[in-house]
Image (cartoon, rainbow, N blue to C red):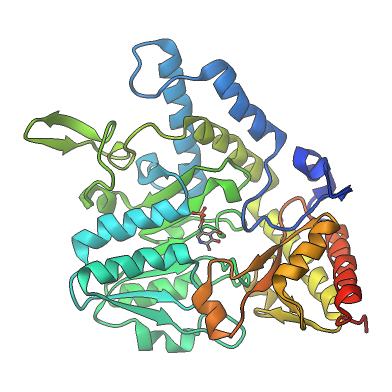
Length: 414
Ligand SMILES: Cc1ncc(COP(=O)(O)O)c(C=O)c1O
């Protein structure tokens, strides 16, 4: 695995140097939240130590400087996504909030009874429940892009769900449950052909893949900093300027107004219109450092490295009997998320035994209950890999699974 010096990268992450249950920590849950490099942690702590002040409001230097730092991250994320302008990037708390802004603010203003909202059978609850709520409020209809047997969008059946009544198509970039990377351009073209909007849940996208919102020509793209080496509590909603300008505010309060009288208010322009109240300033400031880190390593290299790990993980896991692997074997359409079950063992038991070995995976429905129900699964075990993982982490996982087998007598190495 020569694309990335992942061992050197690992040294930048203090938590990865620690022990868990007496063993070196093997962290395989980055799809839930990535670990943070020291420089991100330092920037966050330094902000409170040396820079802390509220933004926009103070008539003093600390406040001006905090405002500058906050705005610098906006410039950075705009460059990272190749947005036309930084005012197209709204800071939110996370992907969930970003999608809720679209579903509530754009949705309430534009969706009528009988309109159709298209998602897929593989969406995370964050890109499902807000649309369900909108459909319920408006009497609209929710439609699902069907999946192939190997959990890809069935592109041959798009015409069955995307049609003249479709007002918005809202899909994920990459699946957190089974790792599929979707062909967004095909979906976008179908959406455009019927005049529908196109919104992308990029929670698992921007952390692993180079995203160019202009090339992708999406209307909205939502992401979470905590999955991209940044702090928790910071998200971004990218939206095309003309759309954001036409949308009503999401939350009301301080900072999102131009003026207020007893009779009403005038909303501020972008981006403040969607950033009511005091934001997570320290988190936003530290997010800039995470973006620099990803830029320095390079998203193409990160994706290439993850592809190598994915293939290695498949080779090794397929050598064990009694492991059921989910998702496509077309690795070009797949990120480094390995979803599996051990025959006869509940995924939570797999997780608990691996935890005793210092291996952190996720177990359960991964916030994708409709997908799990479709496959009659109570859940899966999920190992997800990132910039700091290497083949030795896969080896540790395999040793852990052999231990699961010893305990449950169900997995036998071939
Ligand atoms: C595909 C996908 N969408 C949305 C989310 C929600 O992200 P957040 O919890 O940061 O809002 C996640 C989180 O795991 C995800 O994987």
